[in-house]
Amino acid sequence: MSGVRVLIADDQAMVRGSFRVLVDHTPGFQAVGEAATGVEAIELAREHKPDVVLMDIRMPDVDGIEATRRICADPATAGVRVLILTTFDLDDYVYAALRAGAAGFLLKDTPPAEVLNAIRVVADGDALLGPSITRRLIAEFAGRPQPGHRLVKSLDGLTGREREVLALIAHGLSNTELAEHLQLSMATVKTHIGRLLAKLQARDRAQLVIIAYETGLV
Image (cartoon, rainbow, N blue to C red; front, top):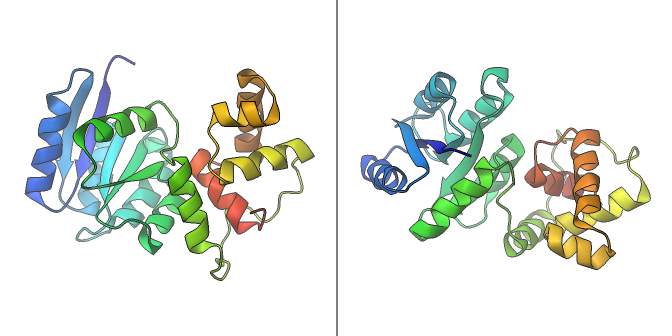
């Protein structure tokens, strides 16, 4: 990747400025714009088509969750990845943002080096859901009522092995850990994940975790 193009969306000018300085002063990164509202974020995403949007949750006009949903659902911005910025650790906002299509989330007090790594991970097409985050996400929402609208209704189209892989993803295992646990090659693990994404029509690993939870697999 020659350079990662980043759009920064936050209603606080100081926060936007801090992230812009960080991004613009890092080789291989470029800030393509700043948005102070959800509507601006949607418009600038359509205009610039950045690789990653750093998206705050609480913003005027349209909040970050709805802005994320619109960006991810719009064919014109289908390739744009959204990384949620939040002052909250795990709450309904974060879960709703992941369901809307976000590729992951970061706390605003995350160290700069980790922010840049997160942007890079998301831009490369992966989901930013580490094992500890995934386990806590599942634990937080496992006991709550099922949402009215699920990403998928059932897992009937999956093979036994695919169900096993999905369950392990939902428990936070990385590709390397999946390969070791199942005694498979990395290529085979990636093939299984690719088939899961296709069969379940999921954008990324984050949505696979949500599907596993919502269908009762975990």
